[in-house]
Image 1: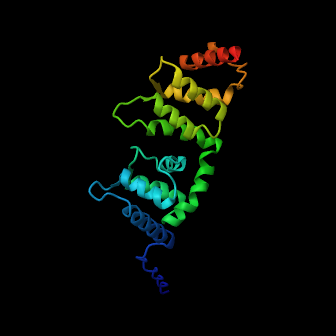
Image 2: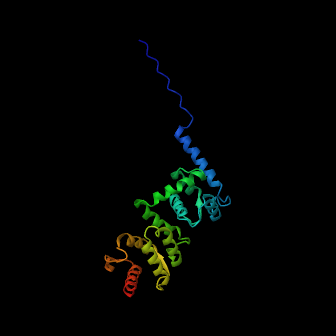
Image 3: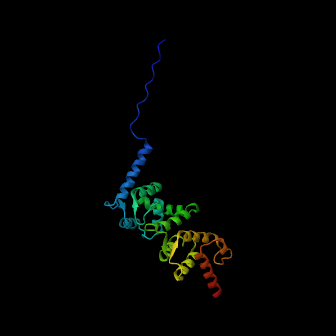
Length: 222
């Protein structure tokens, strides 16, 4: 009995699947978008490029949304975006043009303020401002500006009071990450302005103990 002939398999298609082609096109557009702001001599977007981006987005370079954009890119160096960082952030935002990025900024803001993201953004903002090698702390002036920018809209009373205290006290010239993160915990956990549940025995940083003492003395004197 003759054997049945085997059916020839279909030839392998050399073209890429449609989703992959679409992704490649998106990356190309994101790269072209990057090139419009990049300093070609260093292959990065530098502070001048960031300023031009802010101008095109119609936002100030001090706008918190630019810091949020840096967080989305996981940018490592203040004022600079590498091509990989740019790709990471803009692919996630599905923003491959200026128009799309402008449209996505309000959505990015909503994403950052979600409880699961905000603490990470808050810690990132401190690290992003450490511009020197092996730098571990920020000067008081920078901390006050950053607190106003990042935390002020969410805890205005606490931030205003802490900024006032930091500006008049003489003991601390800088703030470190531990103090920075514990102030966020303070805002979340401590009843304000009565401070009834603040317990200095709970291993708060000394700067916060001193802040609370200052607030209580101020309240008594009023």
